[in-house]
Length: 200
Image (cartoon, rainbow, N blue to C red; front, top):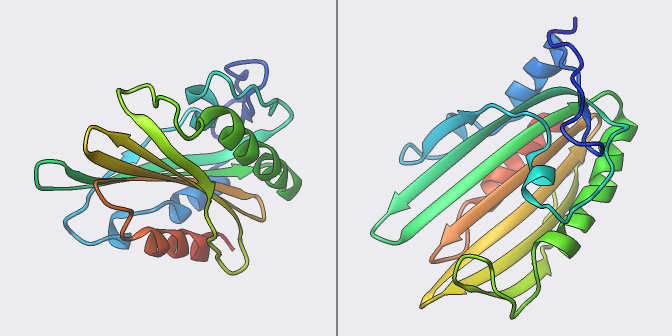
């Protein structure tokens, strides 16, 4: 059953959104939830309107207009401790009309995002700091395709880590953005495996 009428893409390259009840429910089961992290983390659901990574990088320019999103949802989990310490995990889950569409976005978008949006070591980060490094991450999840990248940024005397994970299995595609200041992410493997177990 279609619960939302197909909408025109926000730009000529964005996927069409045509939500279906069963796929929406499947996306909601897969997204990171409050039970996946300790109680000190604060959890908030996120209402999505398509693939946000495409909207946040003006130079991305990847044509995804042939894709149809049939389920989508997101969540944010945050933990703050001390004056300058913070961890933030944003998870977005998408169901596509076919497995080939999910494979297509996994093949096209992560590589383009790394090349055009993450910047290069030594360049400004746009927020008063500079980028120390941009590199692939070697992470795996059984039965799930994973691409991952890490960006390390320094502003003043504080460093921040930003890890970008892209997961794909069957018709499902997931983005996990994990940022941490002033130390590397501590529970990334837990987050990755929790989501991967629900989509494979």
